[in-house]
Image 1 (cartoon, rainbow, N blue to C red):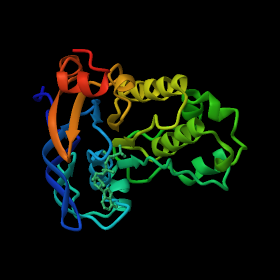
Image 2: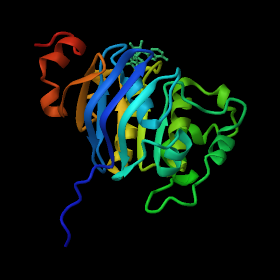
Image 3: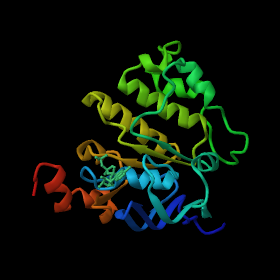
Length: 247
Ligand SMILES: Nc1ncnc2c1ncn2[C@@H]1O[C@H](COP(=O)(O)OP(=O)(O)OP(=O)(O)O)[C@@H](O)[C@H]1O
């Protein structure tokens, strides 16, 4: 038998992002292992979106990103977003990109299973509707007619059709009713238990703690602390800032 695989699925090294002259993100190293669910938490403006956008090779403004991003050991820093998607690195942005004028079925059909996805799992529409029964009952509804939670689920479903190697989600809980927040986060957990590798950005630390394996605390663009959830949840920086000053 060969030694157990330790190479991370997704890895960033020396990743820096500047907007104009301002350094918004400076991450020495972040690595996510196969089948791991890592939660990135931090206050407004901490750099959470900037981090996942830089990993995805995508941005709102015109930031300058430097450093190395690797997927399964392959340097993908020079690839544009569509090529990173083809390679298996997918981001579901905060804005939950779905086609508003296409039905749920059409939205899924547009996210067709890529031909060159060696060893990656593309979920079938049947599997997707098992995972998201709400979507199954709305197959003919237009994307624009769906609730925030349903759009979020459709966004995840579209990503699953594309056989992600690593999936990044930017604040999937935002704007959702508390009950739906746990449904969405528990579904993400179930996908990880099924083998998917996930980087989850969340401001809702309380809802994030029960589902993630590891927490990364970002502050002013830097990783202030990271570690297994069981240890990090008692870290006073997390407890005081996000859990109502429990310490
Ligand atoms: N397009 C942009 N142009 C200029 N500065 C930006 C841009 N996007 C983000 N920034 C700045 O970069 C920093 C990090 O922002 P970012 O959106 O990554 O934070 P965040 O942790 O995702 O915050 P939130 O939880 O509010 O979404 C902030 O200081 C923000 O003002």
